[in-house]
Length: 233
Image (cartoon, one colour):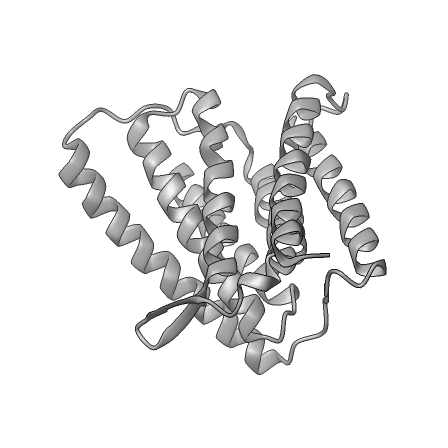
């Protein structure tokens, strides 16, 4: 398969999996009160991602890998995620203050979750599902772009990492459907794009091991969970 065909197919399949999952997730609801409606979306997304990974891996077109990581390296991944979380949060807050001024805050769409729901479905399940699609599948399908990129503070970010990160961030524009205000949407869009780029970089840094971005993603979302807990006190 030619490089352009492979990368285009990877992007199209990712968008298709994401769109189908969201569409069906809006229609099909699991009749258990504790399980949020977004879980149908997550469940379908991980199934379709798994099928795609298995198919393209069997054809020798994709190199998906989840391997154990040493504790020392796990701590390094967690520290990286914490530093990026703090840096992006501060940067985003300053940017919103400058651009939006004192626009009244709208409702926080994440407040509809109980702390336990947030922890299970947003801090644990969502990172696993999203990383399997955007890094495990998409980033590997974009492998032909890995030879080109940019350097940022001695860190090389290749084109495949940037594309997967941007698409990951754009996927979070769905938050517009929750009635969130524009400053909140901007914060989420910018934040998730940077986190997506970080996760792609970590996958490549750790020998294409998708467990690395999963750990980083869980760390970031868990910090959000702790902030939610503090806001409820």
